[in-house]
Length: 280
Image 1 (tube, rainbow, N blue to C red):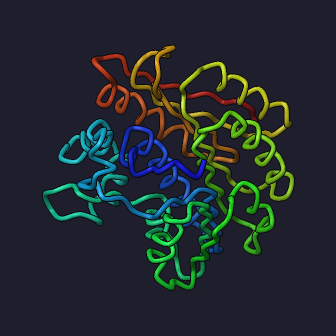
Image 2 (cartoon, helix red, strand yellow):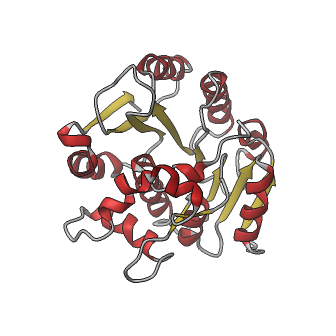
């Protein structure tokens, strides 16, 4: 797990989906005057250089933010997402990509809080520098899945938990389910956004069944695929399972995901999936 560097994948199609849904959830929380707390269990370094060696190795951003950068026909959700990315770049050239910590930071009000977990020894230093002594942000050099429970429920009693592990080892799937169920027991009214990759579909089916067996209600799934499921190496799709989502999220995604599947999909093979896993 400690060998994983998201810099190789920053700005790819999975980041597009994840960060669009992150923004939707945070904007909804910000509509009420009451403060909220956001917890990011796998924060990474905060930002990524798309002109650096890691990102340029596979240029995954070309099939993500790169395809959206100069378009003028973006759906509202996508346009808001792209506007956030443009804040970190010059007017014409795409060279930087903000991770979820910096995207979230832009949506915090003075009374809101952000708690960031990162275990990687190099990336925690970069993340701490990006937090830049912002009093609203707390940075923890720790395993987010193991350590975030101590922060729940937050004092604000309103908030979002973003769970975005690497899934490099199979045990990540089981640990995610166990942690998610434990978090929900402590903070049942919170919103949870769990990212997952589709590398082997059977693992995802097991993940969904295990979460449902925990008895959690009000849960929706949003998936974006580049090509059909395959036994070949590599991620073909990714998705987000959202617990206690904004009531507006499904409508927004029904307008957004078909467009993204068409624009980002490989040679017309793009697809999407929207499903209510558990009703309220």
